[in-house]
Image (cartoon, rainbow, N blue to C red; front, side):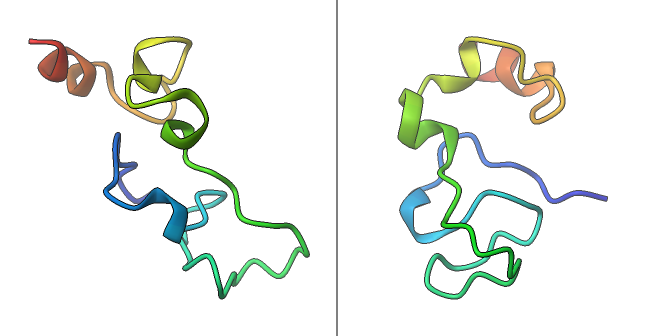
Length: 68
């Protein structure tokens, strides 16, 4: 089972969001030579989940509760 994906973590820059490991940004365990994957909130703002199709990442009932 995959870990829960946080909508707006307090310090997204400290973590790599590329897989379910959520490694610290300074010690990536993937070993694929890539850099840190940014959280969507870093790229699109705090309301990133309201636009687009994020159905595989978050559930629609999470978004519905936040909008209320």
